[in-house]
Length: 322
Image (cartoon, rainbow, N blue to C red; front, side, top):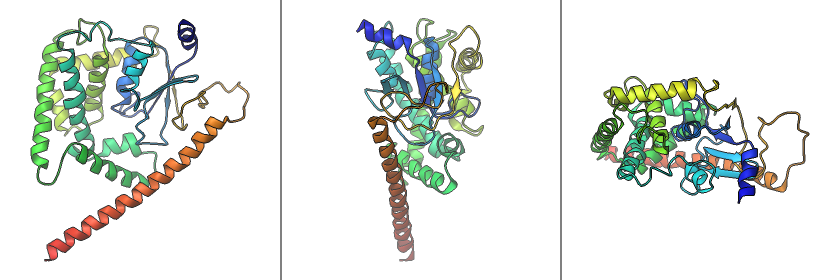
């Protein structure tokens, strides 16, 4: 085990995320907390981007050599990194009496509120830019509408209860912000003035809310009601992101990437060009084939979605004619 840990320390880790926008290193509300977690831990890593699969639930992920931790496996990347003994900020905090309740507020109430704002509560431009701006307009637009429909289903929003669900989502967010503002006070972090994964998740949420959502956003206005939360977010943004190249923090480089999410040896374009080209392994050939199947499946999903929407419009039109 010690030998494996030593090998991992000698290897370079890469965080693969969605692209940067809104003056953030990555504007994805799932990727940014992981970026912040690694920075809070002073863990050295490279930052690479994948925009081929905008709705892949594998992104973000961390890889190093043959090691890879995906977002959709084993409760997420942070839990994988902790379980595998790579980086753990929470070992001293998880027994804290209010850890579970604060975790639930951030990962449930606030996560739902930000999801609602990005896809339903605003004009959707921020979400489109984060996820689909690299795609051609027809495909990007259809995938966006498909995701809006999926979000409404996940949040339990229907025509009949839309107003009630919106009120409930914002009410819970207001309660969560109030509780977290009280918990934070004038401290630098949520627990004992030391960073944890909950700081990373909460900070990522606040930064996306403040910088990616429009000025008319209801959720953004609720964050701005709490001056200490805004100071906390902007202070850490300056220290962790804007001063990322200083000697006080870990180094990272932002390298565009179009690679397919995969397991196995790293073959990103961000690797030094001095390395000789090698034959693709069977595993990499398999992933390339899977990428083609994925694109075909996406096209089929788009066609099915358009068919469903056509049927729904036809049914609605027929009912209004009677």
